[in-house]
Image (cartoon, rainbow, N blue to C red; front, top):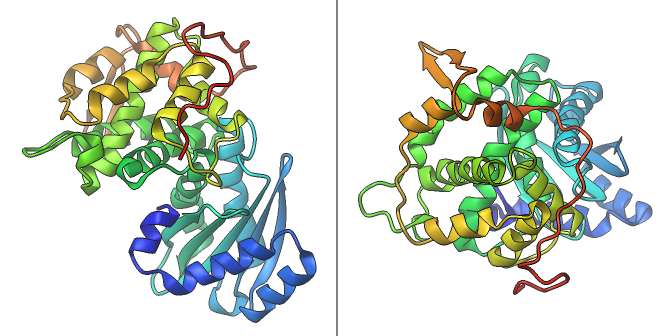
Length: 340
């Protein structure tokens, strides 16, 4: 969940905490005073060239510092693997407690120093954190600019699609689990009667799984047009390199143009034009056949002779050294694509 969604749901107290943490993050003296006011203990975690500061109330959880650090570190490592860097220079992770077991919810706030607020059950054990996907999901939000509320499906779709792939590339999840979840989840993202396209149908299914379906289709189309040389991962890395992260507000057109420029084809912009206001139906049965994915009683079988088997394997493969960025003659370098 992003800041705008949290604000609309009335998370008033934690918005104030997040603001306090974000506003003081660059001043250690003021920052310490603010954290003490909320009785939070901090753990500082270096990630590449960036820093993650974990803040929590030790009296509220049975988890110790090492367990929390391991949990956040695993998620940050997955994000660093997928994007090649931490998308922001400094991140505050606030861990709150609630009833229950395991991580319960998360929200990413796009302040000058971004903040992720995670709610964790008081009965949480180490194995619950090891199975968690929410922390990585929220960190994916760091790596894309904020867009207008009508395009919230893209923010959540990216987080839904990228999170398991990043964890596979960091050796935290199996490839089979990624495709099993997509086979089970993507039908929720298909348009239903009355659908008016992704920009105009803000249901749960279309926001999360419809957005994820857009990402999968874009990934396949980029790879088709570039002979599997580039994929959505390269496009998203290009956005981060261009300064596109949760701390800035861009138009969706500019964000997709920057992503397209990174891979040398306009697959994302064209797909958005097709799906933004039209309920595009996707034959998932045929898509799985082409990718060579079948699921029987939760057992995943891959067909290595399928037409898009090489694309399927490339989507989850650990990134190699990045090839030279393509030049896009159809886009003027340095053009501002219409920011808010």
